[in-house]
Image (cartoon, rainbow, N blue to C red; front, top):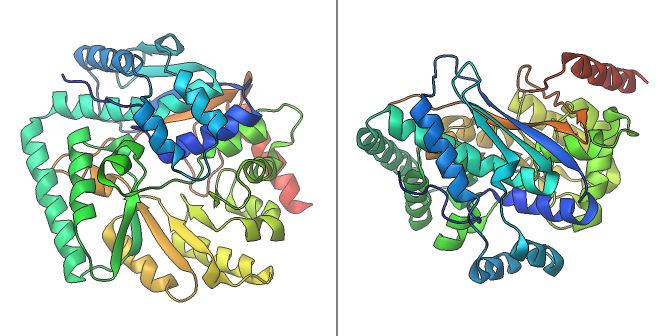
Length: 398
């Protein structure tokens, strides 16, 4: 199989945004990441695992080119010190353990500095997806169904069947293939839509190639590791530590906060006037999106902030129908944008994989996510999850 990841830019923008803050503030932090396939009926063959191993090894041979670093330098919040670090950086295959020791037939774990292991998540998932779909199915037929559905979606936007305002493509980690994602970004960037605007993609490589905006915020790992990686911290204050470190790095730039790492209600305890003013908006990734949006607007109003100046970014399992419904519900009350992943990058006649790679330890200590949707977390130690829930519960009651 030809090489899947051909550039170190081929990852989501927020990996660089978090990477710069990690480099400047948490360079000694160490993390463990664990792969999980949530599909109960999926089985990876030994041949697939060997191909995945070979593809990851090829990815680890890559380095940044000067042209790629020059492109990153055009993004206003990246600093020359971080660009110089990337000039020296490349992935380490020694940080990976890839075996067949899992119910689904594939186990992947990475361990090392947070600077390194954070960067592995997205390329690893992209590799696993593409290897699986090329080896499990008749790929050419799948690609034909992908292109047919993509053209249909574009026609829907052009005709005004769906109106979704500003939207971006967020599908790198679960894309059908590099070829499929590139086709989607290219076609969407070439079209004009009635009432909808294609803003860009989270894939920095494709953003550079097609001259669209690279889009990204922060990930759950940021709140989990900053808030729970220091053993002296009360994890119920994870959001405060994470927001404080983000503002220290970026000030008013690059400011969309993720709310559901330890529940949105707990997040709002720390999202006080200073942060609510500095951050341009917030991102939804679990729970009922309308309830969440109403809660965020009420919070802004309570703080005396005009909600129409702030952005709600929705990114949880979206399609055009759901995005259209959310846009109509919130239009006029707040700015709305959408990050749409699998529906754009892997909609075929075959079911998509539901695979994740999550931080499971930081500095030798368990870390966990308590999202607004039960079951989205992935901690190896149930006792730590209960401890974190007790911390959150105590804080919410006191």
